[in-house]
Length: 216
DNA sequence: CTCCCGGCGC
DNA sequence: GCGCCTGGAG
Image (tube, rainbow, N blue to C red; front, top):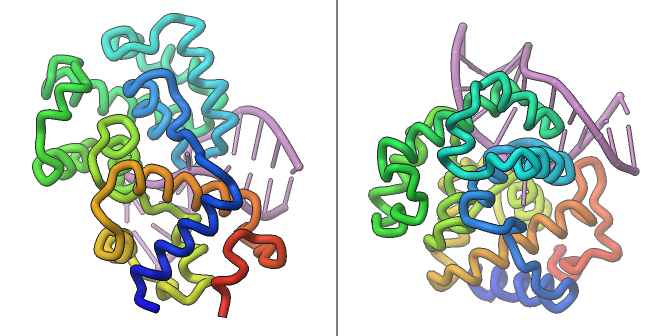
């Protein structure tokens, strides 16, 4: 069985067990992008509270959010944690949107992935995972999102060494899988779901895991 | 107490 | 490479 066959079979196993994920949760591409920044090392439930606050104050638009003083923004996103840092990170992203496309997020779809990804990574506060989440889930670019769950799951299955870096792990998936936005979208979603419920940090609940047949 | 769909600055 | 940022749930 080749690496590609294994990764595709793992996808099938997770999808058969869990069904479609319908990701990313969010009512608009802009909301998805904001959620990607707010969820950095943070439980999604807390992000939902923060986004709810932004909606309640009717500022979940690029111009509306950018018009807020940073302290006001921080207070609104407080439930998401790291609120002072994240308020600044959101403003860096909004500043980029303003300068690059005059707040028209979807205009970024006209860029090539190769051109746009480095620009997104150049925004202070947006690293590779957040950048790829925005590119894939908000803008439909075919880039694979790697996160802590991906590292853990691949490590425990002997498919990646422990200190593999982001780009290497991303390449394992992108070299093996067909370039398919819907597949990348659902694959990462399934990894997160398995990571939360089975492939936990301290101990994996391997006995009941959808991927148990892929252990040595 | 640990963990959470990380990233930065030192 | 390490400390820091932070609230909320379990």
